[in-house]
Length: 80
Image (cartoon, rainbow, N blue to C red; front, top):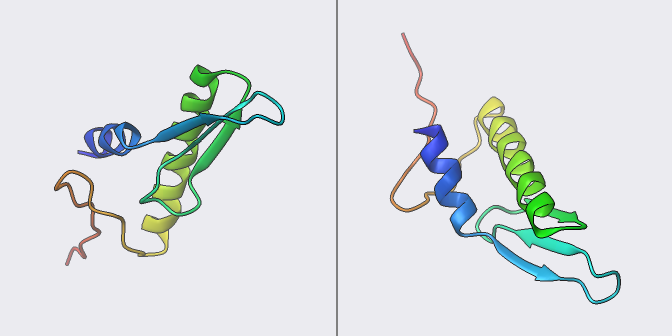
């Protein structure tokens, strides 16, 4: 489930070339603060995936909600 969630989120990523230094910038609009910048598009995608994973782990560790992506909802449920 987590892998599919990350893949779905990455499909929503937007990329552009920054004109001031010709590097690639990527972000996932629904995930505030998840962005990356790198010299190549592939490196930018890899960095963005890492940032996304860390962002998800941080939010889970703090019991914060995660965006619903393509009808997939990750949530923490208490276990008795």
